[in-house]
Amino acid sequence: MTDEIIEMARPEGGREPIEGDKSPKEKFLIKTTDEFNRCVDHIYDLLKSGYTLYREGIYSSSNLFSIAAIEEIVKVYNAIFSKDVDGYAGKGMGKKIFGPDYYLWMDDRLTDAVEEEDLKEIFDLYNSGALKDLRNDSLYCERRSDAILLPADHIDDKFARNMLLFAIQAYEDNLAGFSLYAIEISKKTDKLFEEIL
Image: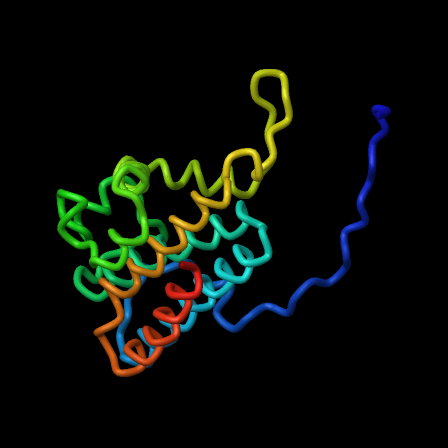
């Protein structure tokens, strides 16, 4: 390969600004059931996207959507209870939402579907804040030890499957009961869970 520089044309225009785009970000609050349900739709879209990419064998991108769904689940959950949430569910947030021991919140179907050591690895990543790094590794190529590493080099089918099941269960155990609409969406997430198995 030569060392030529490739210039990419940047499309003119882009999307039209959405009303309110230019206002400063505020603390994330959920004020109404309708707002909560909109967040549920967003989370379902993330889970469905992760599922679709997993089925297509695009494991690193599936993993990216699973992690994004987990982050959004934590953000929405905390917005319901604390009303003081920033845009990212970071280090230590897992203990606040899921309990200090990873056994406390898991439904039997998750422990039946994912090996204990694999679940412990996911909880350790989550509780240490390392999911943010894994999210980046699922998206960006980089150079390490004098070699190019692609996202596919970090994430295999088993890990992507386990993260997606974890994300779906996180929705089920933490948000599914807060509105009738969220319960209806949980029927869809249940179907995704079963199809992944």
